[in-house]
Amino acid sequence: MIIVSEDEDEGDSNPFLFLGQPVHDNVLNINHDYRYLRMGYYVSAHAETFGVDVTPNCTEIMDAYRNPLLIEKAKRHGIRTNYYRLITSSGSEIDAPAVLFAVNPFTNNSMKVVDSGSKLPGMIKRMSMGARFPVSIHPLTGEVMEIIQMFGESTNEETSDFAKKFYEVFNIPICKLIVQIDDGGVVLNHCEPALKKEVNWDIVHDKVREIKRSV
Amino acid sequence: MKIACFVEAYNFIVKSERIALMKFKSTSESMGHDFEFIYKNDISKIPEYDALFIRATTDPSSSAYIISRLAEQSGLKVIDDPQSIRTCSNKVILHDLFHKNNIPSPKSILFHGDYSRETLDSIISTLGLPVIIKTPYTRFSSHVEKASNEAQFIEISKHLLRKAKVLVLQEYVQSDFDWRVGILRNEVLYLCKYCIPDGGWKVRSKINGKNVWGDTIALSRDSISPGLKELSIMLSKCVGNGLYGLDVKEINDVYKVIEINDNPSIYDGYEDTVDGDIYEKIVNALVS
Image 1 (cartoon, rainbow over the protein chains, first blue to last red):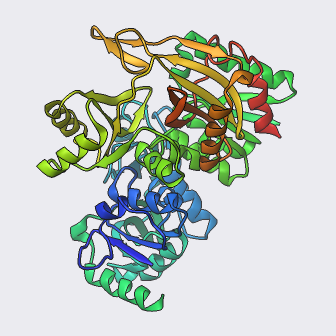
Image 2 (cartoon, chains in turn purple, cyan):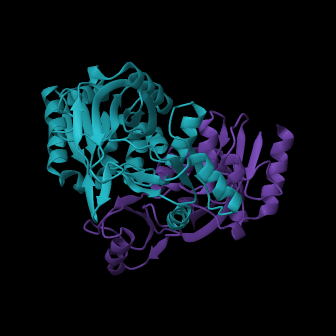
């Protein structure tokens, strides 16, 4: 297995070098950001072109980072989600309070919590860029929390089982998850790249060493 | 069978595209199938259909990708499928694909913004001048530039790298037209020449400050040369089993692939002029 990591001490190759070489072995791609058109995505795409197994693969990346695909996959695998709606304008009836996520090619860290119905139309108009792109709307039912998931470990103890299940289903080594905690437990709302400084790299290093020993 | 055709409002602006869409609808209905246009607000309706045909512009960042993936997961026949969208929408991935599969194409290299003397010399000695600079997400000849000298190369590439992590640099190959080979299910569907307009260097060129498209000349698919046919099918099989449009240069009887596109243009009076059965063939691919 080839470890491709943006952390020079950890990997067998860094992303720039990796992209210039043919690939003959399975790949573990460690990056804090797998978004489309980012280096984390290109590493997985390069490995796939050469027909080797890669973690995560491009389908898994897209399934996690595009909000409707994330929610539908979570539902199929028994991960709790809210009823969500995709809309481009506020013409239809929507209840507040709600958590909104932009579903467009440009926006990251797009979460907006809106507690008043009167504020929803303006927010939807802005987030949909004038009805050009959908906005994913989730009801606000609990406490909103951001957690960093690293190989199934969470930065928050309360969500450790949830992070483990998320990693089993989605196979994304590092990401930020936006969840709500309510009486029933953890509800998944969104997945996006973690900031490099938000990642506990000691956990990542330990996990990578474990994986290296096991292959 | 119920066919959903995913479109956006802009698909109905140009008359020739609007008529082509209506031809898809009337052809489907004459073959006994329902054909409905759906928009991004209709994503939740996807499981109601048997097949999905995407005519809105595709890209992994677009709503079209979400629709395509949800349809695939719901068991619909899908054109364009998610993998084809991911592969064809990105010129960096195509660069990889061509190298891995020995597809004859203009010499190309990836560029991340290393402007050291050694790298600049290597680029110019490998690709020559002028050199073509492409962003990963180029489409309809946009975000493709030509640099005639090193200073222009530095200026253009720095500008493009503001929005792209990596660029594809490509040897410039001069020609009067690109072959456009339409492929469906790894068979030739139609054949055209996409001409370069006078005074331009790509199919859509900026001439005297205005965007000018070259002419489209349709030819019978049966007239395709064996070499072009073999190359086109070899490449389409590397991507998948969908609907593709290949752009190919022919220089001294040698073919070089520029790119393969999912979601190729099909406009009334252009691609369908000679082989008018392309609508029927695409509908058949969706329902069979």
